[in-house]
Length: 233
Image (cartoon, rainbow, N blue to C red; front, top):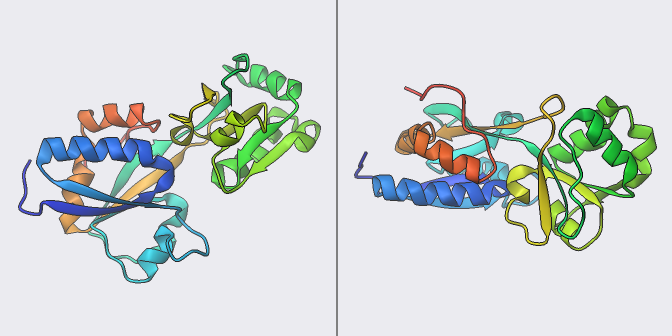
């Protein structure tokens, strides 16, 4: 797959930097096309957020947005498809024992036994501090243990000893030094974030590439789940 359009621009959430940088490199090797990544928070007051960039009239070839943010973006796209799904994972400081979190019952026991639980201010953090603890039946018992991490990642806070266990998107925890990633939430409790690829005509080849087996392998290494749908037309 080769094209005369040798550079494409991609707006994407900074949380997926690891996976996207690897995908961009593989994409260039496979196609000869350079994907220029602009990685920022999705929304918020800053002019640099993806949503505010798009509202200001910036028009990348591709924008990757969570489903919750789709209505915030201008409709300038010719193609729309699932790019990947992002699961929530659990980590502990690297010097800590690795508890068993393989089932809801075991995770419940672990959370009751620790003294502090870190979570982010983003969507995954809202799920952990509310619906997850409710589902486990321990929200009241653990409310005083919650540590809201702002301005940096949960992984960084764990590495610095600010909590005994933490929750964040798997893609954000991978590669953080000084922590041990225990794995994703048990399937019964998992809440994945679906990331949608919106593309103008000049970026449609990137969206098609995301549906390939080569891209799927790269996604798994970067902490996200490949799309389950067929390639867009």
